[in-house]
Length: 336
Ligand code: ISE
Image 1 (cartoon, rainbow, N blue to C red):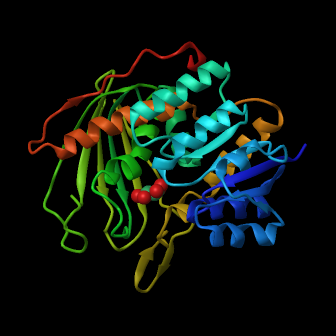
Image 2: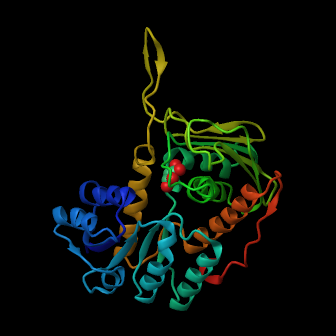
Image 3: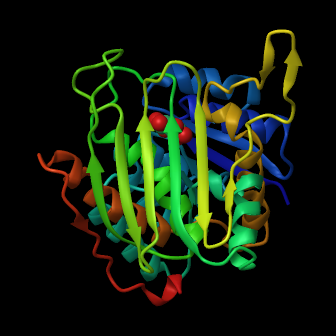
């Protein structure tokens, strides 16, 4: 069976997903497009021979659409998620599931009413090979238990429309989800440390910042978020265990050595850095939809990340570097 996919809001991320479905993945076809920018929708649909819909509701309701992919901005996700769930259609939603925890609770309530998991959240780092090897070493207890994790999330630049809270709920959300998954623990409290700001970009941003988190068992996690660092898209992670450490390797398979020194090519954006992880994530979703199953991160994962983000934004907005507790609701049985 070919899964007929309708895409809502194909910006840069959405167009990259369309490209991979057309050129690299199997079993999926993009048959429907909606975008508030009708000209963009037409540009995406035309080479695919896909139908452009006037509203997201019409796309979701269409009998020609088996599954929905939401790649619009976070604040627009909730309304379309609720429509897709009401229509009983599987939906792949780019992160964040919703920008606030309250909205994520409403999405989970709708899914519980539907009686099955329909939503998969695009947390692609769970599919990255290096993070998976790190998790295998941790889970195999080869080096004892996790004690500390040091993360660095560096973007070359962000646009002026990037708001202060996005450092947490658009950028650090990747480490928030990855740390929950890697450690198999929830985050219990967060703090934001605010160093000297770079003068390279916009004064409205606290850039860089360090998000500090603590997990159930006490693992201390730091995350340097520096979104205007100019030189590259550079993601680093070092897991410190009781008798050793594990770090993500360099971003590329080769190191060049010559008379000027040794170096790796740096990636400049998330599509490049996590290309294979994105492919694996979407292929798994298409395969699961074809079999009528759910795969990948659930709405609960989207909710849990949103609760940590809400606490992180509260910590960011406070003058002092104070701990903010993270309070999760009891986990509904559907997500056990
Ligand atoms: C963007 O939305 C992403 O998901 C990237 O992975 C992240 O590095 C960037 O900061 C976000 O804006």
